[in-house]
Image (cartoon, rainbow, N blue to C red; front, top):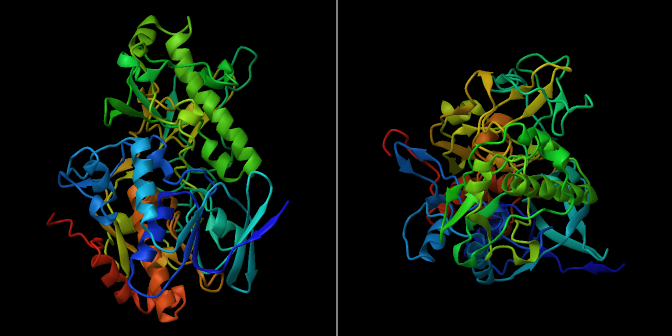
Amino acid sequence: MAEIHYPKAGLVVYGGSAASFKTVEAFAAIDGGERTAILVTPDDHIGAMSINSLTATDYGTYGGKTIGDFVTGNFFKDIAAMWGSTAVNLRGQSAATEYLVGRRLRQVPRMIPKTGLRLLSVNMTGTVIDAITCADSDGNHHIFTADIFVEATEEGDLMHAAGVSTILGREADTVYGETLAGWGKHLATSSIIPYNQAGEKLFGVEDYPIGLTVGDADDRVMPLGLRTTITLRAGKRATRFFEPPGYDESLIELLIRQAPSEWKPGSPTQEGEFDHNSDLWAYSGREWVEASWAERDAIYDKAYAYWIGWHWWQSNSPSSPASLRASMLPYGYAIGEFPDNHRIARQLYVRAGRRLIGEYVLNQNDTQQFITKSDAIAVGTYSLDTHIMGTFAQGPGLPMIVENARFGVPGTKIPFPITGAPPLTYRTLPYQVPARCLLPKEAEASNLLVASNISLSAVAQWSLRMEKDRMNTGAAAGVIAALALDGGRTVHEQAKDEIAQVQSALTGRGHVIALDPYHL
């Protein structure tokens, strides 16, 4: 095992979220000195979910207008331009988007990308992060030092390792006075009896929680997803659905119990392709965030067996309805995507990780009522939209309880046969995101900015979790870091005392930090 030390950089960004590459872009775009940056990611490919089959990106609409791309530095317009379009909401392809990300990063001066490096530890002196240590696949240790560090993971790994205040799960509704917060605001009863013939709970089903009352805090987060790119097999543009390694029908029994009669390929994108959305088992998100690196590898393998196995069962099993098998026959996985991974996305969709508890915690009320902030650095536009949070067994012979049955059967738009409240999707107004949400408490970390999983409540995260949102907060983090270094200030001084300079730099480069919801 070797130790590899890198020259000290002005900025080190750690993480593989959409915030990561936007942070270094914005950092370099500010006119000034010879600032250096290193982008360190645990993934082998840079581009986050936009290069992992999440091509049907949610932008947010208000008053019938699509809003969102003007706050991502024309990223989505650049995608559209590859197809000769000027549409702000064109849906591209993963491989093409990865090419675009690579092209944009090659234009970033004095920036070194380092891929495939997993965080091991954070070294601190008081409130200052001195260095982070990461490991490659051969066990070598890579040590990075910088003036400023940026958290840009999907999971909140860097800030958690640095010991700043974070939260995983839901706050009680009394913490911020949120009507949608906490346990049990949307419980519905399914007709499914969630046990197998041996009397064991089906995979993905938990015991009904005892001791919780409606509105209580708990540790639940939205499930993982494994997006897939589907297309018609005509002209051999697709591979057939296949039986994945580790295929185990018991993993998908809950899905089988509610197999649809017809299959839909997903949201149309480009070149006759579709983005096929998914929810994995209900507690997969919590399981992933708390896991070690080895455990995350195992969870990916299980997710692969689960979701690709579900496609295989629907398209090939004699037990699958004939109409379902027939509806899947023309389709397969797009042959132009992920050739090194059997045409399947390399990265799981982590919808929610640990969240910072920072200088200000954005909450539901900030998205619907108190929408203006004097230190705004971005605008949120998407609805308060959550996925399934739990599938619960009440006891042998009793029906399953579902919490937040947004998609019904995990991974499909076929609803569980339920009685109860409608799914939790609530409107927001275009709301401002304050710079304080990117700042850990100064007494905990004084040279760290958080660009992904910023300081917000679980309910607010239902809205501010889209790829474009992470790009926006990443861009703001990059601007704050650059101006702080140039001015000899801490990130807290820059983001609080000199926020007007940050806002001017953002708006001067086409970023929108304010929207009047009544005059769109």
